[in-house]
Length: 300
Image (cartoon, rainbow, N blue to C red; front, side):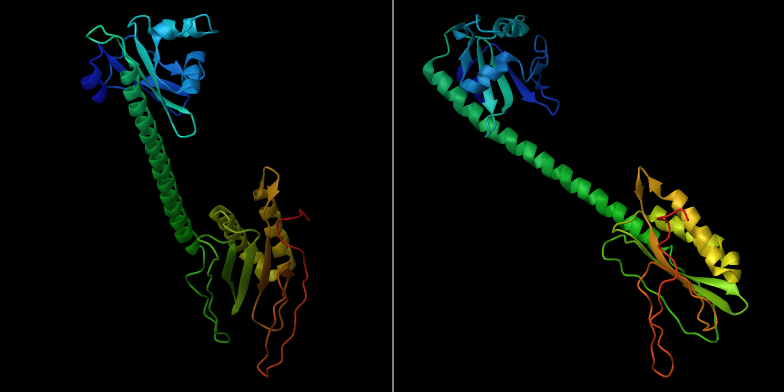
């Protein structure tokens, strides 16, 4: 608008760069005869290098590629091309001006005005791009936070809500992940006949997808009948299922686990986790050593 009021060109078209490396004519400008311009065309590179208004009559068309590039504007016969550069020298846009209504050539003062306006426009365009990038990052982070909250809620539902009742034991469980979604899992299994299985698992890595925990939970709960009769076979079955379901593109997640009942007479397989320390009613403690390797890492 400032250019039109000050210099009165026959037409003024504004090209703006897009994210695909093209310059497209601004929607409010006349589109006829102003096709998209690839930013790597010789004419635009030379304009960016010069960083000043360039009258068509001053362009030496003998230079490589410039004659073909100018042919793009043949339908409108522009008089002056004005580059708009960002601070790093990248071409942000292009102002294409027709001849002045007065039929006078663009003077040195006119070109000085055009350069000042183009410089301000380039900085403004760069700021707009930065603002758009920041808005996109904020929106991406908002979506990630929302997805993580959904994942956190989904993971919380994997922990047991109904606890098997035992006259011989008071117990509780709670998991506080280091991040929104963690790789820790615990469960209480009702094995019948006054017996209960306690499962503790830590899937290697932080921010583990909930699907892995869901798979482990399903594997464990589907094998309850086996666990009540044969704990080693229970671990074998869970290991096989977990092994087959977690090999993704050569990346394997694995878990450590303890499966036990609270009765002193029962076996306690310990697979890869830190050995637990049972404390007896008389205050004595003992360290229970591992009896198996981690789950899901090896097929056997």
